[in-house]
Image 1 (cartoon, chains in turn orange, purple):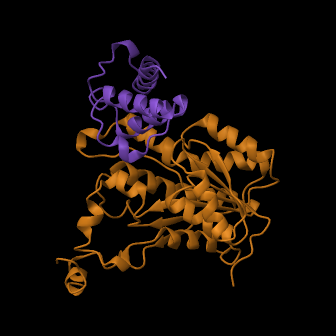
Image 2: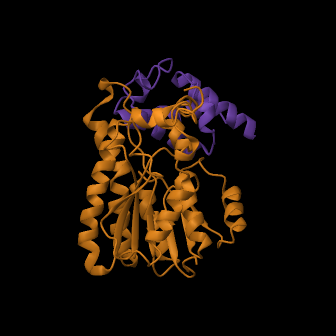
Length: 267
Length: 82
């Protein structure tokens, strides 16, 4: 039986594509009214609304809002505060960080920018929502397994994900007296537009020789996990990092490649 | 839309991001040549598109090699919109 989120409001940053959209659809299918932010030029509003209608979700509210802009975040919270009594679910999904192709790409300025775009939005928006409307009942931050596994170009992104997961634990502790649950979802290997932007166009095709198709995580897998965390049935889970990887991390090694050799294309 | 307006807009966001003089920017160079990192480039392109009310899909931007190329792409899109 699906959880009933009718009458609840969910804010999902970067909610018009990829993992953000899948999470919005999962929450919307359960009845939540979703507010989806997007960066200028990155969304097809009519297509997003069509997808919500197809799953029987309330029509989403789309707000152009850049996650790195303090002005945009303030305007977003003001718009929410003038429209709803509370944001029940805040999914901090939109993030950006410097891609490191070579050692010389590292800089203090780039790292600071990465923190501003990939860590601060979770803290800043949680605090701003709390001040305007009371703390959300659920905060879910989207992370990845980059801190623990080498990933191409991912140096700074992984650093921000490690920081984000730490921030989540402390936010959970600080907000526990107010009844807020703060958790992170750690996923890996999701083929979205962001995946190609970070890793380039060739990785996905090349990896077919080494990764069985069943191991790729689908954005909907993450959306369903976020829904579960916000459903009321996992309220004892707080300050945790939930890994969504279809079990692939454990077998991401040479032995597994040998084991799966008959399933892999060209191996 | 005048190409000069687009050029001025891109220069403004480049100068703001990299703390350099807009007039001194050599538009035959790439943003990376001027010291921009990947996040700067996303911000400069996105902010320029937003101010100019122009949308270009990410796919159409990936082969651009210098600032002139970006201004041309934005200008072409603006002309197509008219």
